[in-house]
Structures are given as structure tokens and as C-alpha cells.
Amino acid sequence: MTILEGLLLVGTGMVASFLNVTSGGGSLVSLPVLIFMGLPSPIANASNRLGIIGQNIFAVAGFRSKGIHAWPYSLYIALSAFVGAIIGAKISVDLDDELFNRIIAIIMIAVVLLTVFKPFKTATAIHEKTDTKSTLIGIFTFFFIGIYGGFIQAGVGFLMIAALTSINGFSLVKTNSAKVFVALIYTLSAVAVFIYEDAINWTYGLTLALGNAIGGWLTSRWSVKVGDKWIKRVLVVTVTGLAISLWFK
Image (cartoon, rainbow, N blue to C red; front, side, top):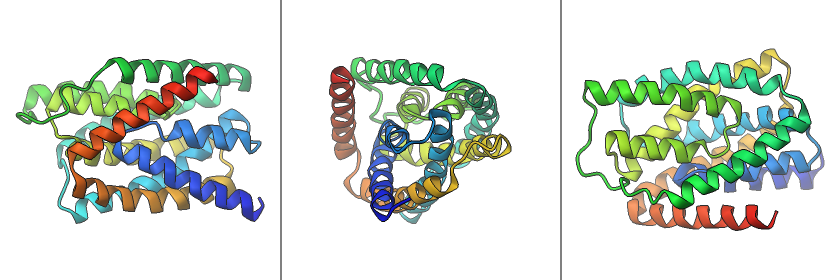
């Protein structure tokens, strides 16, 4: 890997973290860059997860430094997603490169359609719900989100935002604090599967993770400072940008 490629990966990681922490879709940036740099799609998918871990360790710390968390509810749904991610990661490593690329393309379009046509009307907290019924619904929902996250990761942030705001009525700031914790926990199980399958390019993955870590720390603290208003704006810009990019590609 050249110095220029290393700088590209660090910069990509920072951009991806900004998108992931504030809304979602960061892997729709980092994953294509890894593929463009020559990694087979399944290897790029696995290597990208090192960046997700680096990003979310620092994002969780950033939110907690500002006193923002959804504990212990986030632990319950994270453990559910952890189990689901094992299934999803195993599916991803068993797919051939051509089929995987086609699935990525379909998922990208689906993510854009979901986020463009769902206005996130429940994103403003009115009354938080973490009672037994809501918790059980959340645990069930995040098992399947974990399967998706373990499989592809790209766009999973939008699914978690939709779940946490609609099921629990969390504000976007609190939603994002729970989201990065859940993503950190379930990605650990996915990475374990990828390590077992020898599917990670460590040089590219760790370089990307450096950028993700920097972006995760800075963005988490910034998002608490600016609150829901700016996060909603980032959501709109992110979704619009992804939609335009996918339309022309």
C-alpha cells in the first residue's frame, strides 16, 4: 500500500464515520473505495468492519463523555444483534464475488428507497418507551438487524434509526448513542467469523480504522453539541446524496 492509498483510506474512514455516527450509509462510501483499490468484494466487506469497530469504540466514548447513552436497553438489543450478526457474516463469506456485487447493488437501491420515502416522523422524542413490551419488540427486531449488519453493514444505520425512534421514541442524539454501541457489539461477532474464514485484509482494514476512529470521536461529540436539528439536516443531505449517486451509477 502506498502513502497516497493510506491517506485515501484514512480520509475515507473519517467521512464514513461522520455519515455513520450522524445518520447512516458510511459503508456505501468506504466499501466501494476498498473494492476500487483492488480488494475482492467479500474481502472488502470483511475488512471494512475493522473501521466500524474503530469508529464505534471512539463514538461510544465520545457520547459517554457528554453523558449521552441508552443503558441498559442498548445492551439488550446489542446482544440480540450480536447473535444475528454471526449468521449474516457466515452468509456473506460463502457468496461468490459476482453474486455479492449484485446483492450490494440491490441493497444500495433498497436503502435509498427506504430512507427517501420514509420521512422519519418519529425521530423527535415525545415519550421514551423502554417497558417490557417495547424491550421485547426491540430485542426481536435487532436480531434481524444484526443478520443484515453482519452480512453487509451498508445502510444498517438507517434501519437502527427507524427502529429506535419508532419502537422507543428516542431523540436522534440518544438514538445515535445507542446505534454506535449496538454496531460495536455485533461487529465483534461478525469480525470473529471473518477472522476464522481468513477474509480480512489487515493492512487496508486497520488503515481505514484509523480514519474511522478519528471521525467517530469528533463526530459523536459534535452531534451532541448541535442536537437533533443538525442531525436531521445531515440525514436529509446523506439520503439525497446517496440517491443521486446511485441514480447516475
